Length: 109
Image (cartoon, rainbow, N blue to C red; front, side, top):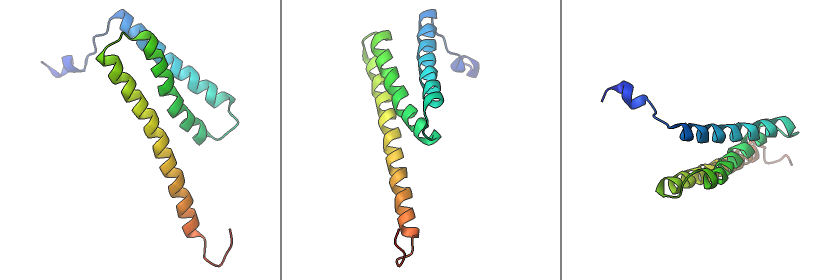
């Protein structure tokens, strides 16, 4: 096999349509969150990083046939959603701890 044939995806029309639906739903969700939220960009990105994979899980229940491929896809999406939350929690705790260590002992916060 040549390198050119390895990189080429061969999707049927139905698979391409499902891929378009997944991407469109994710982008529609992210655009409404960023447009309508009055909060910071970091919290909007964090919320989107958790909610978009969960939205894709819901869509995969509808659009993908039962089988081991769907189960693996759902598992990967859920793991991604949980890992985004875990990394954000660790980052927040680390930033709070570094801020507390930066305050001199004689000064009250």
